[in-house]
Image 1 (cartoon, one colour):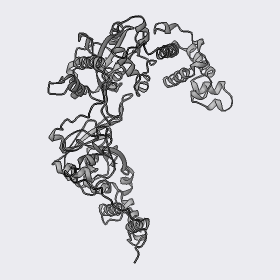
Image 2 (cartoon, rainbow, N blue to C red):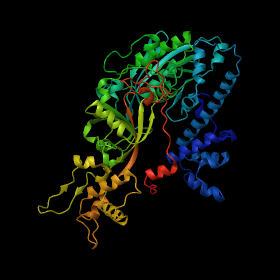
Image 3 (cartoon, rainbow, N blue to C red):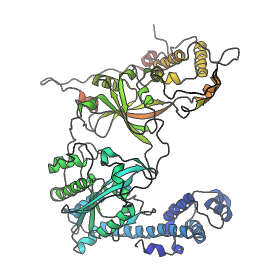
Length: 605
């Protein structure tokens, strides 16, 4: 069913098979604040249902006829909700027809679908393990999405003797206040490399990040751009036909930015893989260099050219159609820039995190390292760090960011990573990384004014940045005086006996007392220190967040690894020729011995 015919579909045609569609529709209506003559969904349930159903607000817990009645009640009150309901019901009918086409295509005899050529590549893409959760989950039922006019499976095209028509596309995206991956540029090329469409697109909302290092675009490039997403969608509808196969590298991300749905597709990222690295997706530049002998992005700044990327994906598709299927490739061994060996890469860092908190990970008193390496840090680089970062994110925007922690020397960088405490593992390319608990200090009150009266009556403002000494104290610097007093009393109660405590806990208790000084935050006579109560209210206790910290290279300055070997094993030198390497066997101590070593029980005489 075409999207034009959906505008006239009868809402009374909902049936038992539309339960999933109705659940999704009611959730959208509730989110948009849709109301009928009895109010919103909650009020409607209370007025029309009986028993526990009156307070069951989850649409999936109700029968389809109940949901259908609510939809028709809301649609009769306002034409806007009628359009929303027809969009969802029309999509449901289209999805049913598409599923029937797929079943018919899957039942084709082996001799119908070619084993080589574009149709074979489209079949390999649709058979990929991640296809259903990526392309199958495209929300083309949502507002603003457009579907190609006709979508036919390969079997239909083969039986109609329709030759496949390859069309490659690539998009550039930015982040705005309304869209985390807003379209700002698109290029479309045909099988011969002819450019069918190349245009910049005016993004919705206010641009937060142009991602200039990737797109090569900035605000000055859009001063006279008037093309909108809807204009691009109309162009694509005229370009894409029933026998068209869309080609791209990671094409699903481009289709999401375009809000455009079409099948079949050939995704070159799903046609190739690295040996023993199932989680790693080969990059477009690496594939072109190794398979086509073509060097991409020779400009020097590393920025992407959407026309170049679209043509590269097309050439890879044509190469694989003739020479495939390709065997798994050996992992890349690209040398890392020597300057990057000074850095550690931190990801899963929440936006707005203070740079001082990232530095604090390497302070001994935070309990994340055995040796203090905070003084060895030269700088911290990254976007969306610091209190000035907006907490309001666009729909779908990542809540985390990344950062590079640069050290003064390579040796200091390696020692700092080794000293970090945390679960050790490897990333998709075998580079060692650790999950580290980072102490985070709340900066919501950093810009509050201190109105305490002074001799001059002037308003004094708190310093927004912490001193270097306070920074390197880490968690201890954030411990309140009341907490220090409680820790002192606990140590007195124990008679300063610490045999039952772990070394890390002993260090933190000691550091907390030293940070609190000799002044008693809660004296025995009930008096309070100056501003102690106010300070306790304004300063939130430190909390921890898990951050992934990774080295820039697996070993020897090379960025590669394997699934079946750990980074430490790969870093060890090979045994000398003619002398077999003897396995190291260290007997495990008995349970009693381990308890004695931890100080939990007295040692035997």
